Length: 290
Image (cartoon, rainbow, N blue to C red):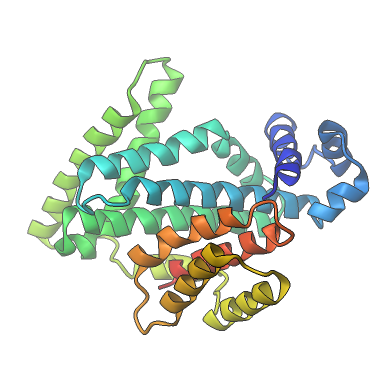
């Protein structure tokens, strides 16, 4: 999202949080951002399109920053995992994302409700994947249920702390709650009893009708990018490396993911900045299904 578009999105986000989604009109956003109606519709097709892009941009930022925290580190490093979870909650608080989610879920906007559910599923998928990495492959059958319990415990602990105005250290809360999760996982493994299994993630994803990105769509978009812009040597190297990984029989996520942000950043303030952002998002969504 370029700077001008982000300025409009930031103004819209503030209004959505203060007034509510249904009470905020496009004209309110135009007035707050001090832009023309034509400028708004040049960036967003509708108000809902504006909301969707805000949510997608926030999620993409969180994903990139989580990846950055893990680069070069042991995948089993518990402290890195704590830092990643802390980052997720800190970003959500900074953007008052919970308020926006609640406003959407209490609205009559079906597409936006679906988008919020997709956000929650993506976060749970990522947490499940990381729990298996950190606590071991033998937790796979119980990891998703563990994540459901972990997020519930953490969210309610945070809720009580805030309501009672108790000072708290977010990383300490996460650390202690992870210790609870470890004990729960051990109990599940020793008893062999669980209420949810790993396949429940796929069932949940199917239930909310998540959009499936096909690899052919990514390659077609890549061809359009190359036709629209003359890459410099560094951009071409990154672009070629990304496509090479995507064409491989087994996509190596640890190799591919660190290439995405540098490629996108290298095209900032070019005539294809927005298209590059879309290209990277397509890849990111595609990898969620792999």
